[in-house]
Picture 1 (cartoon, rainbow, N blue to C red):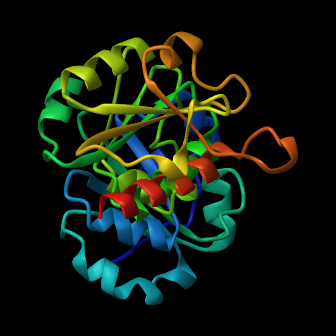
Picture 2: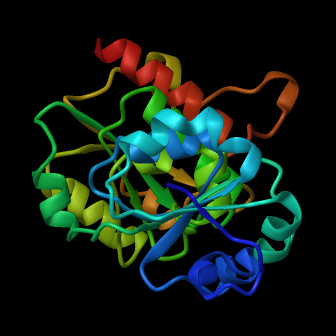
Length: 266
């Protein structure tokens, strides 16, 4: 049965207090999932253990099937809007939050070795914008990408905003982190991946590219893009722009590129 919370300082809901501040300082191997769609995705991912839920009182009835599917030891807290907003530190319009434990990230060699012989993955280099990372993961989930690699400069896919923007895609697509872009290229080459580096200066046009059995699509941050030394070591690909326009948003670019690569592969 849901546990009613009537005071914002109730110690039982401590993990939900001051959500935005904790977004910045971290949560000791935990993350926040926000909204009904994301919660339903989270419930289907066995590698993440849900520790508790905090719901607005008016959301309980619509989530009855979700509550029935939870393990019996997962507490479900409820509060009215005023108390919930005071706990969280800002108005929670969706009225649905969950705390879950992160899954361990495997070494990249094990990660790549676990993939099928025919695989499409994405590599992110220097992507510090949570909206873009969330959008890319959403596209990766939609097109059946088998995994995502991130360098140390790319932001956390389980940051609350990235999870929300991805509509749960960061919970669906497995990922692991690399020490550097150089290490990413070396690991991909060792695992027999053909590397396609997207850049406005790419030597080949995307529409003419046919993916290999194992293909890795590398994406860089808007503005600087992928490092020149990385482009020099990979197969570079571009999407032509009309009227001399420079480039697309990187999340939009990923959707176009993944659609092309998956449709050509099938």
